[in-house]
Image 1 (cartoon, rainbow, N blue to C red):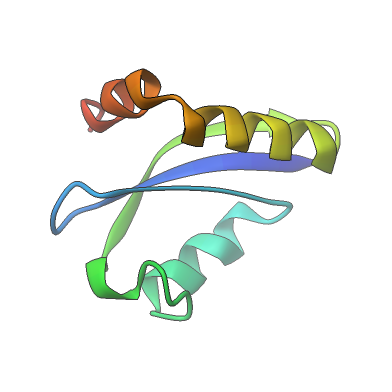
Image 2: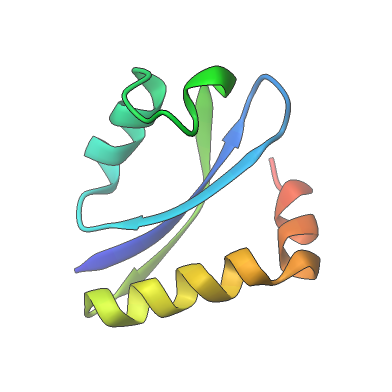
Length: 79
């Protein structure tokens, strides 16, 4: 299984959208400061997760979310 996950910074509501085959590991990497692009905005909380059968489907959805400004604004409203 592959997943698209959306994290929200507790510090400033910044969103991070990614994909992985191990969501728990990835969240730990983000919150431990092991990801340079999110390190400055720790801590993060998981606000949404979507499941996919393959990596290709997850990457396609990740790109779709990142490209959609309207969808990003809607996601920022989630707790």
